[in-house]
Length: 217
Ligand SMILES: NC(=O)c1ccc[n+]([C@@H]2O[C@H](COP(=O)([O-])OP(=O)(O)OC[C@H]3O[C@@H](n4cnc5c(N)ncnc54)[C@H](OP(=O)(O)O)[C@@H]3O)[C@@H](O)[C@H]2O)c1
Image (cartoon, rainbow, N blue to C red; front, side, top):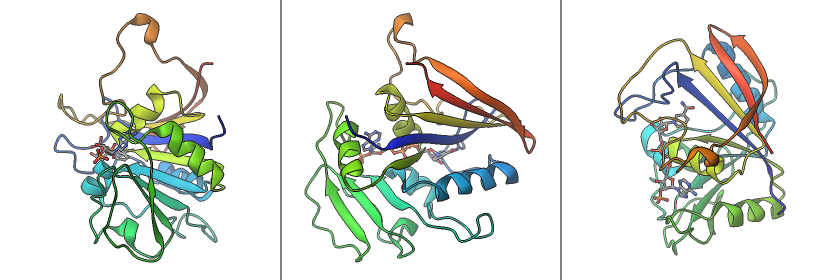
């Protein structure tokens, strides 16, 4: 299968949470980690999030020139089966091209820099990631950064569609049994289904800790 090189990046608390219990965004990364994240984003052809993250965080998904000299904004990709991206979302501004990935016919009109790409659903009703990745590769997207949220990251991990996983862990706790983690979804069924990782590098970064994993083949 020809697919982009996929890098998953997320920031979590010491208890593995990605946001507040009400799913609102909370600052987790240190200044140093934010700088690393922008550099990574700048080096990717595209950055992908799910509609849940658009609803909760309204991210811009661009690169700030405060952190990167001569930034190149990646293409923004939103997994949005039912085409619900709000018209006032930052991802629909004109600062970069945006692909909205739907599985239904979408008759809504977006700006000139916004393209709707239709993909099949998988048996959970989500966008079929295999088909999507093949499509993105055919469009010249060789390196893709997956930034969240919980459901999207889990689905990329579960299907083995990642080459690198960067996890920044901050030294504080959030708590809450329904607070998003980087592996929401149903999880694995048994011991032999564990998703094995190799640790490539571990380092302290601005008060927290960065671990670079790769999937164990
Ligand atoms: N700390 C971090 O690094 C970080 C980064 C990003 C987000 N977050 C947090 O993560 C939370 C949002 O996570 P979330 O789980 O609610 O939303 P999400 O993962 O951003 O989006 C999930 C939605 O995307 C759509 N989708 C379509 N195809 C999919 C596929 N193949 N796999 C997964 N999803 C697919 C589905 O909605 P449809 O059925 O409508 O298509 C699904 O409900 C927020 O609290 C946010 O603050 C944290």
